[in-house]
Length: 230
Image (cartoon, rainbow, N blue to C red):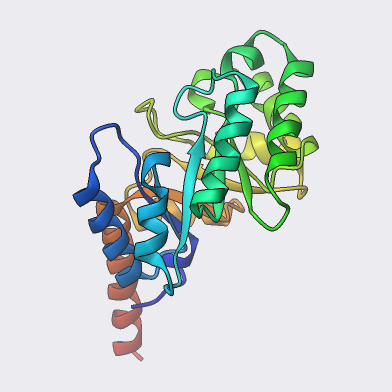
């Protein structure tokens, strides 16, 4: 199995109904497929770290998920608890309401407080939820994330049901240049779509387990067919 795509994919089990069996299945799939990261809800981080210990897959978890409207102190406390429980990458949901209300100073303080609580060695991704934002809001949110020290700007949680678009990615890239990486999430279901986003400079993808496995399998099939045709 080629890992050229798998090593760019975060797989996840972050829906409210996901229980222990789902987390165990996620971690087993992560180890087998050598995905770069497996994301779980905060209460499951300790278990995921135990299950993934010694593997090539990192444990990821969200802060302020999925709505982003938590008070800053809660987000900071959650970040610290997730780190204590073994999370190795963190995704924080921006306060979408503050962004839409133009409360940039509040957002800057909040994102900086979260970044201060998260060591530089731990990648921090800021989730914008682009499907709920206007273009100017996406640009402003992306800049605020980078100015606060985000390693990645992430397009969304995947909870809105609206697929991310290439235009969303181009808007973010235009706002931040090469100051941070981009993670795309939401509606990515096939290899060709992932490759199009990769060509636009996306360096990480948030994809559910089933679609991720299909994407990696298709990549392997194409590589085998190409090799056979030589």
